[in-house]
Image (cartoon, rainbow, N blue to C red):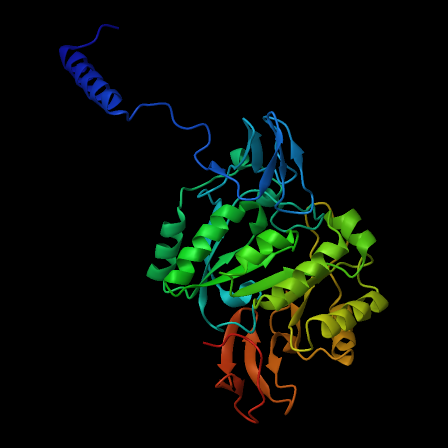
Length: 370
């Protein structure tokens, strides 16, 4: 079909505009990976090979190979993050959702994640992003400065690095946390705990709070079900506390796999002896998910029994998660036993804390309250 004169003129105008844009560089080939940033923790092995030193996997990679996490790649003898400034998830959450029950209750937390993870939990609730490559997720461009600006615009008192595994987007998290700290926004690290001590020490300079998954006090379970190891997790928990990060711990109770009462007691005793009776422990209800759809949800009685065991072992703040309205969503003063924070799921309906202590008896309640 021949073009009309008007169509031809429109085509000519479009060509002129495109030519002008090309001369200005607007049509230059985009970078292969817009999220590329040289990694902070790795060493060259000579030639085009590197070893990542961010986490215990210590992946040795040749040119073009990616690490266990799927988001760190060797190129030309250097290691690069492929997700810097490319979150696939960005939401505003109540901080209680992390869960953080002893940190700025009722406040909002600007929450981000990228693709990738250095664990392989068979029960992962966010497996669509944690077990994906960045090419397979819907990403948005959000620089560290933009994350902090968005947090401030939305009156979020903290930024949470969460949903997948923030350790695999370490450089992005680190730069964002540093800027946030300079602008009075707190940082929350929600992690499975697989990180080496060097990167953790550096990160701790800017991290205020952390919820660390203590998935089991059982090395065999951690290796088979989660792709983790107990020694690294316990070291991360202890070092985080030593470095001044406010920590809370979460244990997802999976029926028949990690709900043995003796293991639960052993974990509770370890927590008290190594990080203190005042560290909150959240027992979370399992729902059939990802590769464990054959198991039932955790019985409420199993969660209640686990809480009872942990409190008898001396832990003062033990919670039950994923059961909104349960009395174990609440915080009680270990001294006078009064209810001091009332919750229904993530909604806080009453707070009786004054000057970081129980309003009724003055007993100090550990946490970040201001």
